[in-house]
Amino acid sequence: MALDTVADYISEARVLLQDTVQPYRYPDADIVSALNMALPETAKARPDLFIGQTSFQTLTISDTSVAVAMDPMYRSAVLYYILGHIQLRDDENVTDQRSEAFFNMARAKLLSLSS
Image (cartoon, rainbow, N blue to C red):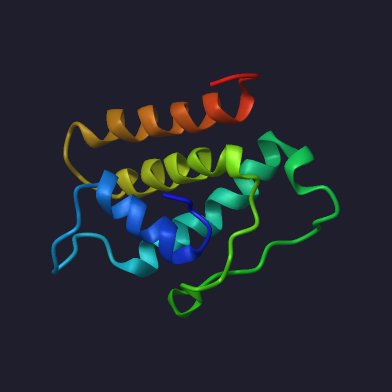
């Protein structure tokens, strides 16, 4: 998946969360909210990916066709951050571990020289 647009992130997140059958466990708005949080967090770790950008557009569920400006090599890191954030909201015992694993994968992809 190319992860070019907001819709692409929603779709791929649903696949990895095993949430592809309606009614969805995770509303689109929650996934977009996680994307809105992922971009500034990514900028904290890798400011070089956002040179010249001083703010982030707040995306909504009506912005599904909007392109997400991100270097293609780091889009999976943003996706993993989204997954970690979504997993935090679940109340099952294993979701904290899954959430931390996704956050660690995001961090590793952002900070490693090769992945």
